[in-house]
Length: 361
Ligand code: DAH
Image (cartoon, rainbow, N blue to C red; front, side, top):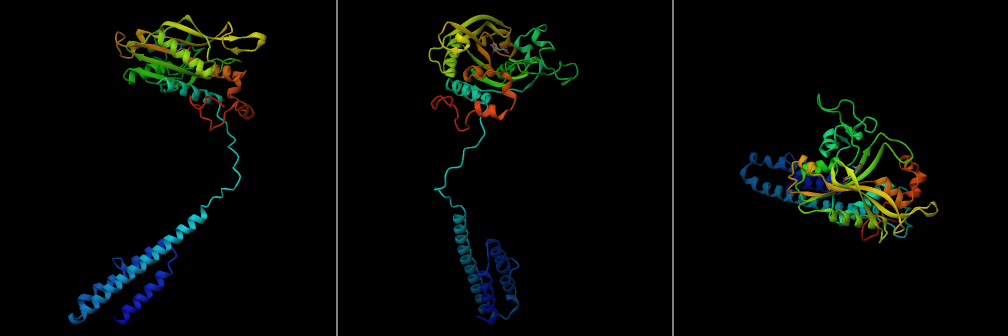
C-alpha cells in the first residue's frame, strides 16, 4: 500500500473515532465514501495511471474503502449503544416516589348524565346520533308534522337567526328540541334504526326552572313490528337503571305531540312527604318525559313507507333527570361555571359510567 493511502486511512480513523454523534458520522461517510468522497475521487484517477501500477493501486484503494466502511460501522455501533444508555438513564422512573395528586378537574353533571344514559341505552343496542344546533325550519318543525300556527314556532318561544339561507327560505332556528335529528337519522340511515340523540337545545325562556340553552336526549326506534309494549319496556328499563330504583313504577298518561300518535307522557313514582322528594313506589307521581309511536306522516316525510316501517320515539330533559338523581336544587347553577359547585356536584374523570362498573361514584 502506498504511503498516501495509508495516511488517508489513518486520517479517516482519527476523525471517525472522534465523531460525537450519528449526524457527524454521516457527514464523515459522505466526505470519504460519498459520490464526491475522497476515496471515490481517487478511484476516478485510476484510468490515468500506467497499466502495470493500476492493478495494485486499485486493490489498495478497495482495501482502504473497506477499512473506512468498517470504521464507520464500528463507530456507529458504539454511538448507538451510548445513545441507548443515555436514554435509559434519562427515562428512569423512581417507583418509590409517592403518587401525584389526581387532577383537580371534575366531569360536569350534564356530561355525566349523558355518559350514564349512553351506557344504559348502549346496553340495549342503541347507538348515538347527532345533528346541528342551527336547524332548518323544515327539520325542526315541518317534517315533524308541527303545523304552521303551532305556538312553538312563535318568536317568543324560538330563537330565529336573522336571514340565513337562500332567498325566500324561512330563517334558520336554534333547534328547540332534539327531535329534528329523528328526521335526519331516518333520511340517512336505512332502518332498522335504534338511536339516542343527546344534545343542546334552545328556547327563549329564562327563569328558575328554564334556561335558554338546555339539553335533551331523544330516542328513536324504527323497525317492522315495534309497538307500544316495546316503548314501555324500554323506558321502564331505562328509568329503573338510571335512577337506580329497582321497582320504580312508571305511569303512561295520554298526551299529544304532533309527531307521535298515540302520544304519552311518562311519570315516575315518588313521594313528596315532608317537602322532600323521594323516588320509588310511594303513591305520588312526577312527570319526566314525552313519548309515543312515530306518526305515519313523519315516517312518510322522511321518504319511508309507513305501511312497512313503524316505531317509537321519546324525548326528555337532561337537566331535569340530573337534578332528580343528584339532588341539585337550582337549574341555573348548571351554567354558572362556579368551581365550588363543580367540585361538589361533579364527578371524578376516571370513573367512567358503565353498566358493569356502576353508573356513578
Ligand atoms: N320534542 C318534545 C319536546 O321538546 C319531546 C318529545 C316528546 C320527543 C315526544 C319525542 C316524543 O320524541 O315522542 O317537548
